[in-house]
Image (cartoon, rainbow, N blue to C red):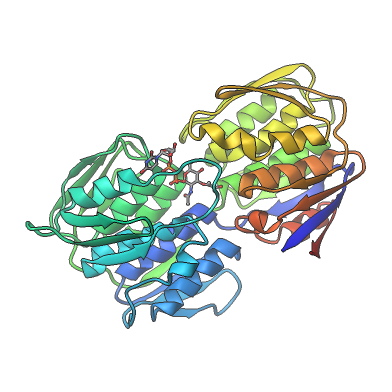
Length: 421
Ligand code: EPU
């Protein structure tokens, strides 16, 4: 267990290079189980969720090599165990993509229910609806999901999701890639990592169209061959460094990003007074003045991401006037960090799905506790902007999703270190 010690008050300055996208990597690595050859995947972030996933795959007999930083070479042609180790599966959320991968490749699956950040009730009924739609017989117990082909076998189908679930869209895409016939996912999620997963699978020989729109079509193919794929940059990591720059009144060049993915976040930071210069694969962001208040409502992509809710809340806490922040994906997400921010001097009133944030002149260092990944990231930003010293306990949550956070922030001038408890 680690905690971070942050001595706040230094504006971030310099440049930071964004790593590969966590939520793309955790979908693409299990999807590589469909490939009967060698997959070389580049720009893989070295974060704990990825390390857990690689251990799960290794435990199943997949050959996993990491010839250089950021590169993972997988060969799943000699899988020896089709039951992912439950203890590891329960440590993260995206391990549920192993269900789709095993069903797609081996037509059966027995996978423990996932764990991960518990900032809300996170059902998987839409995943199950998708698997059943593809013809699977699904048995759910308190701990496991078990699947086998139903009486009519597994084949493509039209599946209409009740909500645009990222996880269900990914799982159905993975499961359907090798099934006969055409699968159509209606009301599909449109997040950048859905497109990245489709691009990965297509590079390996799949036939998927429409990713990034609300209708994804998967034309089943017989087999996938090996290949090389480079994961997209992490939209939320980039947004987190932008929010940290703005909150500390800094000036940072955020490199290795796809500016299109950043539009919604950048628009809000500009409304708050940040100055932004766009380059082809980088954004320079700076802010020398007191921030303005604003209104934000989270939405699925291309809206303002729920995974940036906590970070923008820190900026709002330091803005002049009253901001309104409404959550429309996970209603209980405020509870992961608002009380902690209040202990640092923030003024936040929660009314249903909305946080009313009255800006204060300063935040002050305190001992706070991360309760999930993005809540932890927000507390780090608050600590960087605060007067005095902040201790962020349970830093392992933050390490689920931010590669080399301490090193990257230190290079930007922050005073932050990790201390083992
Ligand atoms: N939902 C259901 N039933 C389902 C699936 C989802 O009711 O079967 C509901 C959820 O409860 C939620 C909404 O639908 O209210 C959206 O959930 P979604 O399935 O889209 O989220 P997810 O796949 O569980 C992914 C990211 C999250 C991110 C959300 C929303 C991964 C591994 N996780 O979760 O990322 O918050 O999409 O964009 O891709 C993070 O990175 O910190 C993180 C939590």
